[in-house]
Image 1: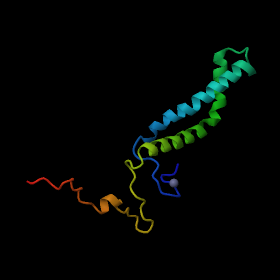
Image 2: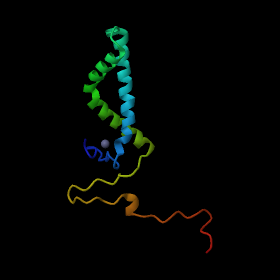
Image 3: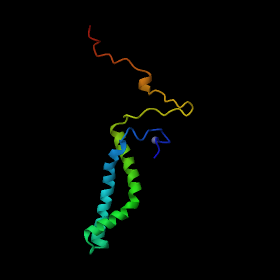
Image 4: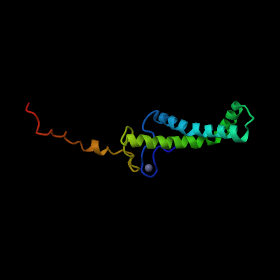
Amino acid sequence: MNERCPVCGVKFERGPGYFTGAMYFSYALGIPLITVGVLIGKLWLVPTWPLHWIVLAVWFAFLPLVPAVFRYSRVLFIHFDRYFDPEGAGDEPIPSPRTGVSPAPPDKASPQAPAEPIGGRPPG
Ligand SMILES: [Zn+2]
């Protein structure tokens, strides 16, 4: 997996253990597929087999899909995370290919004075 998006430079892994949340999306993608496979097996393909053999067969049939589920669960998690936290940790700017130095983010490069409270600052 690329560290950053080759088009816009977004850093994918915002911090250590960032993609732990993608496991929930992996479950959400994988469990329905396995469930549908077991139902098709039990109701249509091999209705005479014991259920545990059908689950085992579907589980093996699911294995080639694991890389796709792995990738798409990360993609879905990134979209989920960026939707709810557009500017989170690990969003430092892209290092310059010429100097290798990261420019300071705009909010840190030009610190602005704290907003003046309405009605002016209190005396003292
Ligand atoms: Zn991008």
